[in-house]
Image 1 (tube, rainbow, N blue to C red):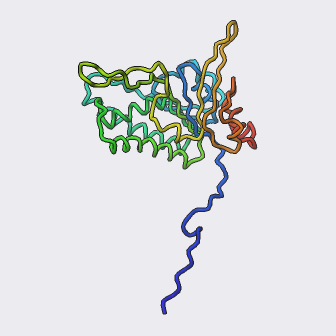
Image 2: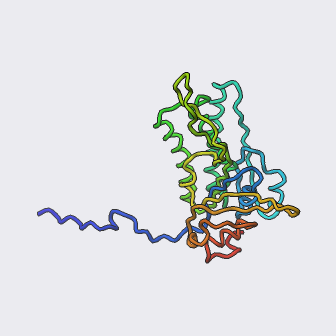
Length: 262
């Protein structure tokens, strides 16, 4: 007589959801230049690693470097005219960037991409070269590289900030009466630059602005979009002016203290 098969249970097939929320922020900071994205991110706990493409730290990082350990790597890559060599250079730089990111995940408390939109441009060039050609499955493979890096960060306890710039929006234009083809034109709107899935992949979206007040210093503020965390409903769709990383983190994790974020 064959032995009875063990009774299957939910626990034998699935992992019970009982893990506490990790006390960290994985966020995208979106905005035009000079709206406080980098300054906000530098308020996160150290050791802090910045993987930078836009050389925009001068005059900002100095305000924080005496308060915590901050480590920077600037990546120099600008496409020019030698397209074949440039694609190989982009591939090499992409691999170096990825290796640096994995090392930072294992050794830092906060990692910042400044800007993610430029990381996306580099990865795109490395994948396709100047033409940006590719069937849908190739674009999925490209996006998969970025998704995997973000998921690697989620497997850790670090804070991870992806800063994104803005770009002009292009929309279908009028049909050319001679060729019968529809062109494209700018809509006049500014939209987030970078990979189009970032908003859904991060836990918190912040939309940064610099508000000009006549006769007074400008004010940095941000609007919170999607938010995940113990007190996310209290901050979602709210606008905050002059709020630091530490102050905002305490709002999202309402049972935390300032000492948890320094």
